[in-house]
Structure formats: C-alpha cells, structure tokens
Length: 126
Figure 1 (cartoon, rainbow, N blue to C red):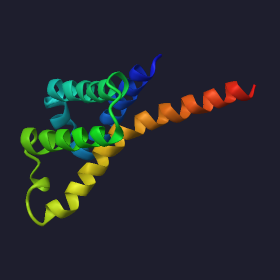
Figure 2: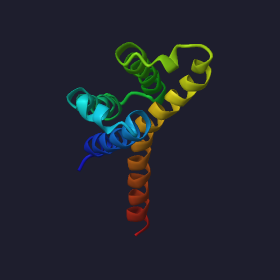
Figure 3: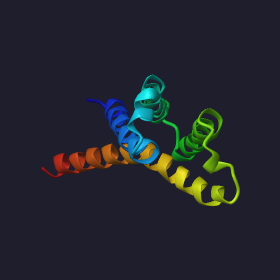
C-alpha cells in the first residue's frame, strides 16, 4: 500500500473516531441522520489532503493554511457551529478546533513518514 492510500485510510478512521467522540457523542441518532453527508466528509477530507501531501508535494505551511480554511468552511459556513463565532466562547473553541483539525490532518502523515524512515534505516544497517 502506498503512502497516499495509508494516509487516506488512517485519516478516514481518525475522522470517524474524532467526530463521533466530539460532535455526536452521546446523540447517535443525530449522527445517523446526517450520515450520507458526513461520510462524504470522512472520505473527502482525507483524500483531499492525501492528494495535496503526496501527489502535489505541498509544504507543511501550505497544508496548514488549507487546513485552517477548510476548518472554517466546514465548521462555521457549512455546520454553523456557533461556538466558533460567538464571543467569548470563540476565544477557547477556535484553538481547540484548530488543534483537532491539525491532529487529524498532520498525524497520519507523520506516522507513515516515521515508519518508512525506520524501515529505511533498518534496511541500510543490515
């Protein structure tokens, strides 16, 4: 499996776990009611970033910028998440939202990079 596929699969799993535990826990019926659109997000977001990271070879700075723009678009424009634009709650929630999106955007990439570096070192030392 290539790095693109590994990142996309790991990103999809990460989004299911993160979204269920933050946005929809304990309201499973709401999660099921929004399921077709949510699955499009769970598949589309990791595929977009896998494409930008592995096919286009964008830098981490560009990826972070796109991540922040997509987080704003998804959370404020599409989801109308009032916690991110009502003062004073926005002072706490915006850094938390950026951290959540940062984790699910950058962590899968880091896992595969470190693993492939360890494998390369192991092969070169043998």
